[in-house]
Amino acid sequence: TYFFKRFTEEASLVFTFDPIAKAEANMHLAEERLREASAIAGNKDKAVLYQDTLKLYQSKLADASETLKSLPQGDGRSK
Image (cartoon, rainbow, N blue to C red):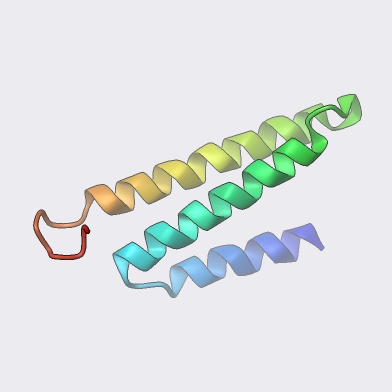
């Protein structure tokens, strides 16, 4: 089910220790949430789910951004 899909996604992030890999994983999840939101965008019966999915999209983007901001300047991996 969708709950288990999201649970495994979040669990995999917990065990991702490299900050760049974590940021990439968060970006991938953000893209996935955006695809999901696009798929239900026109369905009035799923308006709440649409809003929740967009919030998750924004949250994953923010997580990726914060992870990248926490990298030390000039660590050689920013290219």
